[in-house]
Image: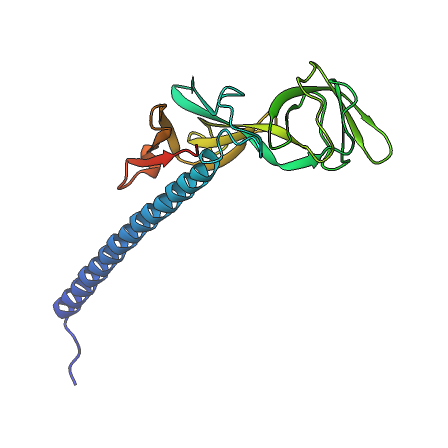
Length: 241
């Protein structure tokens, strides 16, 4: 029996090494492609989620309960510049409302249900499905399972029992530095509550409000680290009348 010569052994080792390197390179290429594809899918899902949630909120812009329409009551949306990016503020009445418990005796105070609680300084809407007005809570007195809302300014009408009182929500969206530095993120803030991070990796948001067609065009720009295949994401939202 004859064994392998030294030359044959070196050739076999070299071929094995070449094969291992080729397989490793193929695996790394496939892994990188899978990572890019996964990042792309994640980015698409994030963008879709943001647009869907923005659509829902934008379509509620200007909502003020069952009262007659009054576009001058408060702005539907406001667009400003924050950190070299557009910010969007949507005004709407909260769907968590309270009912007036007794007919109003004066133009400054309203007796409403005890829940949900309102706070001093809250901007509110009161509506009886014929008229809607805006006011601000100056003081709250709790009495006999009721909240007595004392207003900063008088209303123009004495509202009757079963009218609705809603808190005005100002929902602001803006881009700011994420806690996952050095990335940026899209944030949401409701009134003076702490801001909430929505999606990491969004560097900029551009918003155009078309007053004539009552619609909003939104463009999201992703950070380079998060943008393998898609640089921008667009949406066109028709607001409710």
